[in-house]
Length: 295
Image (cartoon, rainbow, N blue to C red; front, top):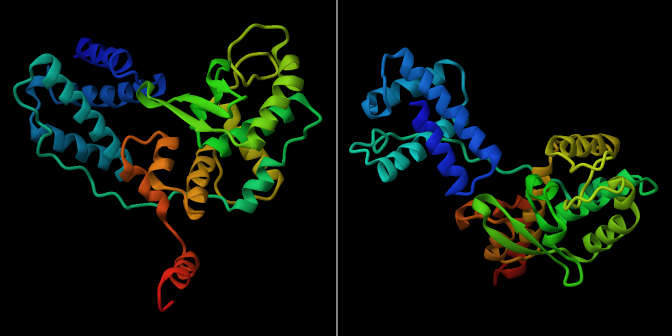
């Protein structure tokens, strides 16, 4: 079974071009399933039927896993067994009739425009790190990039003269995103004034560096954002992904086309982007009054 899983993970990495983090998540989920099968005395994935799948899901719930975590593991199994069908000639897929737990439709957490402004203006621009942080926050909010895409950004992806950034997202899918004037201004300033100090003469293709001249990590940037949010009095939950949510929500609230936002976010399905179309009652009332003939 381990050899089969290893081949599947290599397929995800080489054929599907999934990120190392995503492949690692699949590896954890399948290791969990593999352990369950061994304890049940099942020696191969081909022996698994719908009953074993349901027993595995029941064990996950008994362990206290949330419905979302169970759904994620089930999704990993469905991808894995689909691979076994297509690549290994599996005759019977035990997951065809298995449904996942019903998940509540949760709205993404977003900041107000005023909160975003406070957060972005928090860094101290008199230091190289502060100028870097301002450029990163401006870029993140201007483009809606994922934090993994931001910290791995290279010079080859930047076209500052045209005001665009080329992003390679999930599955190595490429998209072009406008930077906007402020993000471009602070990127240029960071590259001119701060990055030469941070790089310490090292030749590296990555745009955003730590004080040792190495690419900034996702975890470190997450902590940086939380520190700035605390400093400016933002008490709501904060993460790089909240800025991505805010980017999409603020664009749509101001009349942006849903498909254009989908392209900038890199969503494969428009349905994923539609979650950002939530509006509060005040916005709905304003739209009704403005556009309805008897509003």
